[in-house]
Each structure stands twice: as structure tokens, then as C-alpha cells.
Amino acid sequence: MNAAAKRLDRHDWLSAGFEALTQSGPDALKAEPLARRLGTTKGSFYWHFKDVPDYHAALLETWEARVIAETDAALAAQENPVGKLRDLAQIIADPSRDIPAEPAIRAWAAGHDGAAQTVARVDTYWLTLAQHLLSETGIRNPEMARIICAAGIGMAGLEQDRPGHNRDAIGSLVDLVLALR
Picture 1: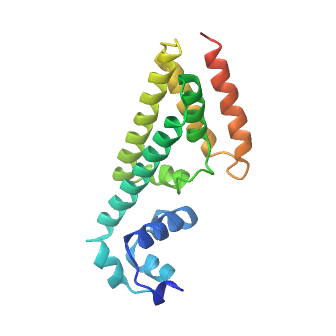
Picture 2 (picture 1 turned 90 degrees about the horizontal axis):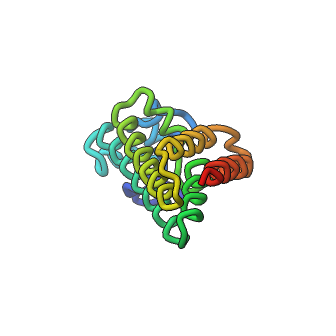
């Protein structure tokens, strides 16, 4: 069934937005190009969103919620702080995970205040988790958490078609930091 044959919901519009942002950048996050992408009219867009800024806010809220939910779920599956730290670093560094459009959202943040604030909250969340987990392993230097998070964020933008390289590299960095205990 194509988009025109079914009633679109918020999720459809948000999914199309993540795809459009990833493929075409933030200029594609407007009612008309999104409606064309979905094969429908702008009226459907405005049924679900007050205006384009409201849509942008919904995209960013969805992305942030997914990041936090995925991170929390991965860490809950681990029992010890070392395993949790390794998983956290993998989540940060791996662009192939289920969080849509992260590199594109980070690029958007350079020119969009709402995106910048959302990215800053996610980064603070990850940094706080990393600091806590490192502290639980006996490493008290908060700069180590910053190094792991910054390296992971940078890796997520590198070699997106070869995520295994990122996993190996961030794993080596975590091992190096843990060797400081």
C-alpha cells in the first residue's frame, strides 16, 4: 500500500523527516517537500503539526527519546559497570544502530538552535553516564568520560559504511582508559 492509499499518521511524517534529513539535509524538512516524498498533500502535514517549527520540535523530541531509550535498554542488559561502559561507548560510536539520522541531526545543530539544544542534552546524558560508570570502575578523572564520548561522537561520523572499525577502535579506547585503574 502506498502513502496516498493509506491515512498518514505522525509516525509516518516523522519517519519521512528522518529519511529526508539524512538524504537531503534540513532544507527538506518543510511541508511541501515532505508531502511530495509521501505522495500526499500538505493538508495531512498540518493535520498532525501546527507548523514547520512544531514538526522540527517533534523530530528532535523523537530522536532524543530514541537515543535515551536505546541507551537505557542496552545498559540494563549489562550487570557490571565495565560492560555498561563498553556498551555505552559502542552506542555512541556506532552509526548503524537504530537511532535514525544522528550524523544529519548533528550537522543540522550547527545552524538550528533547537537541534543544537537537543544534541547538547543527549551529549550531556551520555557524558554523565560515562562519568558515573567510570567512577564505578575506580576512575575518577572526569576528562576520561569526555574523551570516550568525544571519540565516539567523532567516530559515528567516520566510515558510516564500516561500523565494525568504530567498534574495534572505541573498544580499544575503553580498554586503554580502563587500564588506568
